[in-house]
Length: 257
Image: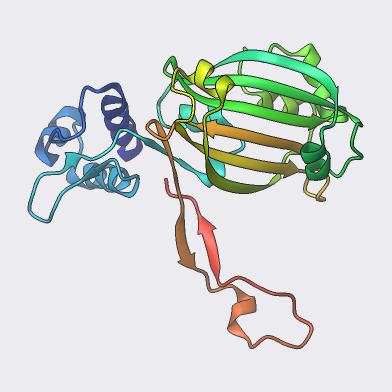
């Protein structure tokens, strides 16, 4: 129930039905609307606070702070899965898919020799019909060639490749900001040079074999990234390190719902 309530509120905020600065319906109003107890309502509001969508001081009714929808790390491999989990409608428009010689950056990321064949995909991703993100993805030939038998406008490329037996179970993400180039500006309907959030992703198999390198660029007024740090009492942290132990991290990433 709390997920349904939170999803509906996110939809109302994103659509402008609840604009920035507007008061969020009270707990009593939400309880009545959903025929729910205060527990699920408070869970839903807490989730929106964690996303940075609503705020407000103690004793004051919450108000809308932002319309940017946060994306947890666990869904970075699938824009479609993330959007659907938020109660939104994902969409896509393929601009180009082609077999090409691997350029230097992609060759390095995929562990290939420069010039080896790869498949490059350029897609515009939509959220409720609104241009939101641009994917520039390079696949190894073994994985990418499968896309020539798939309508990339029909849904999730990751779901299709996984269904064809491609192992995409590990990923590393680098996030930074870049100015929109001419292609970004034209596809996203923004001015050249406007700031974009960029996520560069190296994805591969459970055995560490590279499969995909992607440069995804998001409109920051529509999407933000949420990371929550928490210390984990991993067994390896309960003893002192021994000589020769590999470096270890005391902080683990956990996705915020």
